[in-house]
Amino acid sequence: MKIKIVLLLISNIVIAQKSKEIFTTIDSTKVKIGEEIKYGIKIKSDSLFFVEFPAKPFFTPFEIIDEKPIDTLKLKNKFILTKEYSLINFDSGRYWIPPQKVFVDGKSFFSDSLQVQIANVKVDTLKQPLFDIKPIVEVKKSYKGLIENIFLIICLIALILVLYFLYIRFQKKMEEIIDEQPPFEKAINALKNIEKEDLVKQKEFKIYYSKITEVLRKYLEEDAKVSALESTTGELLKSLRQQKKEGKLELKPETLETLKHVLENADLAKFALSQPKSEIAINDRNLIEKVVYETKEAIPEPTQEEIEATAAFKREQLKKRRKKRFQLVGLGSLIVLVSISIGSILYFGYTPIKDTILRKPTKLLLDGNWIKSQYGTPPISIETPNVLLRDESTNKESTIYFYGKNYDDFRINLAFLEVEKQTDEKKSKEEQEALLRKIMDFEVKSLEEKGAVNLLVQNDTFKTLDGTETLRLFGSMDLKNGNSFDRYRFVSVVFPLDEVKISLQIIFLQNDIYGEKIEKRIFDSLEIIRKI
Image (tube, rainbow, N blue to C red; front, side, top):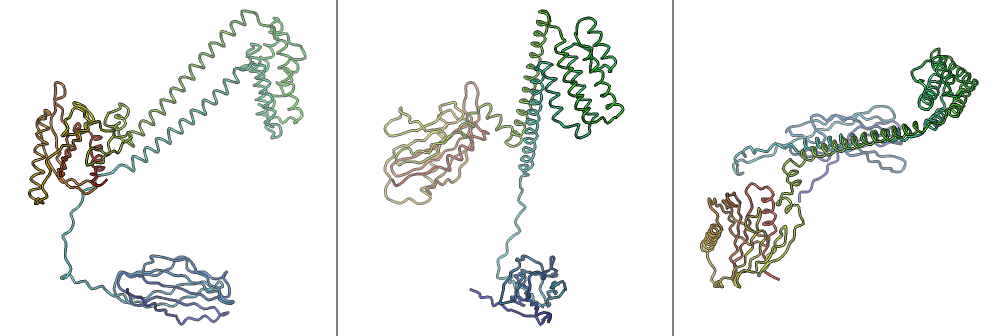
């Protein structure tokens, strides 16, 4: 183990002012190119509050690769502050580490400069093997980050729309509740709410009078059937007197005078910007409340025809509100559904979403609960989407487990076939390969017996989890499906053991991405249990 001797160089700088001293330290003045250098500044002082190290140290031509926090040590009545830096240089030669500016008691001092020798590293290219430059590797352009960001933005927009929709719905619900109140109760509640706003204390007389007169005008228009919202003060008073004359509204003369007085004060505050006393403004609100009560008493009892007409009108209004509510809920649900669908398609892709909705069989198999089981003797451990069923129609010399029947989109066939016990004589590698190829030829013939045509066959080496190695046969073929032929992919492996031959065969429609994933997962879990 190479032992690095730390060389501590202490500069000759000694500041003779109240026993304050500055030292520069370095672990070595001779290093190799690219080697780390430990450089430190130490200050010995009576106090901690008046010492400041450089915020942006300048070490050019050296680079700072690390900077440690200030370390403080108290020794008797003195404080020793240490600041360490890790430096590096990639050019050979002799270089000076520049002095660093340090503030002590508000005055600036400089540390000592140090010379460091950077040595080259000798490389013998004759003894070292050389390699060709590696070719450029093509990397598929990935849009995953962009798609994730778009998906998050869509989800955020959908959430905002949902919250906005709920807020609008809540507001409309409150308005419906208010509108369902009788005009008299609605007016009294509105006047009480205006009183709570403390507009008089804020000297907002124009807003105050606008609100209380609007409540009165709405009440007269809804309950007394007087055109009040679009009428001037004079026109409103004239209309009320006409109603009194015709016997439709039995108002007292004092009520009309009170109303005239309040409306004139309101006109002065709204249009002439007068500033009445607070007591007068509060009294005017009370007078309007009194006018509402007196007007309620002055309204004649409605006839049976009017009651029925009012009830029919209310039913029609309620029907319209319900229809509008259903429309808003449907629109909001449609917006959320579309946003979630677009986001899901952008994130997961169109095909997986479509196959999930349409319940594609292989997609359901892949996403379902897989089962790991052992089959046959010697047992083979395998993970499959469903438990493999035993074929009871087979003879004693063979045991077959399967999933899926003829013409299904996905099929698994696991067969255990008894064979003559092999001799103890060890076969050569060539003989073993010949045996495997013979078995594979038998597998191809078995596919042809099932009606396979136009076979394209390939093979590679396959190794199970327990280390058993064999050949794997795979490729594509046409199988008859009704009156037409469909293109299928097949994968088959055979294990010629001492007394049994184990064959695993998987068949599924070609270009089925889920079938390929199921195939990979099954073969990745395959293991022969030799010891129980």
